[in-house]
Amino acid sequence: MKMDKNQADMYIMANANLFPGEKIPMLKAALEQADESKTLLVQSADPKNPTTMLIVSILIGGFGVDRFMLGQVGLGLVKLLTCGGAGVWTVIDWFLISGRTRELNFQKIMNILAL
Image 1 (cartoon, helix red, strand yellow):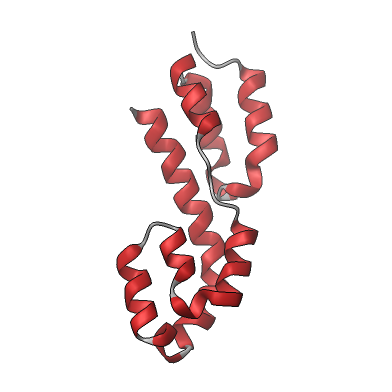
Image 2 (cartoon, helix red, strand yellow; image 1 turned 180 degrees about the vertical axis):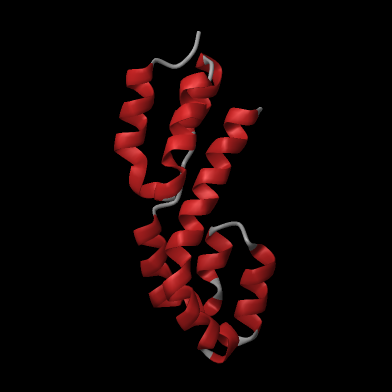
């Protein structure tokens, strides 16, 4: 049994801020084609909140914590060992981390739907 169109719309409305805006139509189409078992997996997935990641990046991003939280262990270690690239990388991440979080959330849900 496939996900109802209304269920897909409700999921998108509740979580639209967690995904890149330009990829919402693709996500909606994939959700509408998903069977019930994948629907349960999608609903139990725990996407990261881009606003929370921005706050983490501002407060302790110089230690690479933001990258560790996104599952980017290698980048987190490099950022930690270089003190956030002498602060430059840290400031750059303040502008990029929200978009990167949304993209990773999208990839995570699409990977679940592709199983």
